[in-house]
Image (cartoon, rainbow, N blue to C red):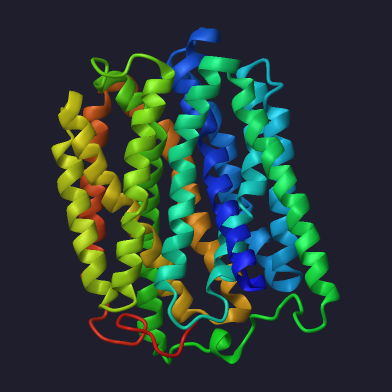
Length: 403
């Protein structure tokens, strides 16, 4: 493997771990902590909010430090910091203590998206497939969170679900530091070797169009973040309630969630392929329309039908992820791209943080049926916003001169 391929592998592993760590508590809360701590699901899950707030708020300083200091250095801090915080979270004896641990996880988790995605697209002309491959790893982290957490809960208790991935992340971080130091010593391959003219060019976009583009990106990012966080966070509990005839143990619930998330993850490859070859506007509208339809169909389904439709709506929820990132990669200059990604993800994760108490409120009052109605309306709003994207332009159609 080349050094660039090895670095891309590290970035993919980082995306996997980032999403895994952010969802360990969701599965643990749904399947065991409610019983161990004598709390309802609606009472317990708001304790995830500090971590999600930190996940959002820390994106801006992480992106700024990456642009001004070192993207590679920030990635090393990500691996080791999130791993140590996860291990510390396993020591929690109360909801307040676990909230503090999740806050630490959120601070370090915030590093990945503004930094890692900037490194993924650096120096590339076609960004759809690299972002899609990287996105698949992130979504496999989402899938594995339910599976690994469920398995460890059944066999070793909930603290092990934080300890095991924490140790793994610290080890990966140390190996990554070794990789960086080795590359620094090689004069033929400096740390920023992938910086190129192609990576620093920007599509020639009129200011008015650029403003409209970023407003639409931020709006669809916000609503998309609500849909993504609500579906991924609540799916283990949805399956616990609606697949009761075929999923009895935590491991079984985890397996079904893993199955859905894993199948859905590969939708990003199809979307990444399409946006490198077709109009993003067309692809985006198609994905958003399917989201609205499948989320509405899920309203009161149970059993095998619910499992099938869950696969369908997660396919298009995950499929949307690389689209906004491709738009940013084509429109933003390399030297401040981490900060633009940080702004995109602070919106995403701020909405994600707000979605947790919303899930608790809706579930406590009306159940998950109403949640799916709300999410379907949100997807319809995304569809309407996408129709306002310009029909032409190098950032909408196939990009030939942007990273």
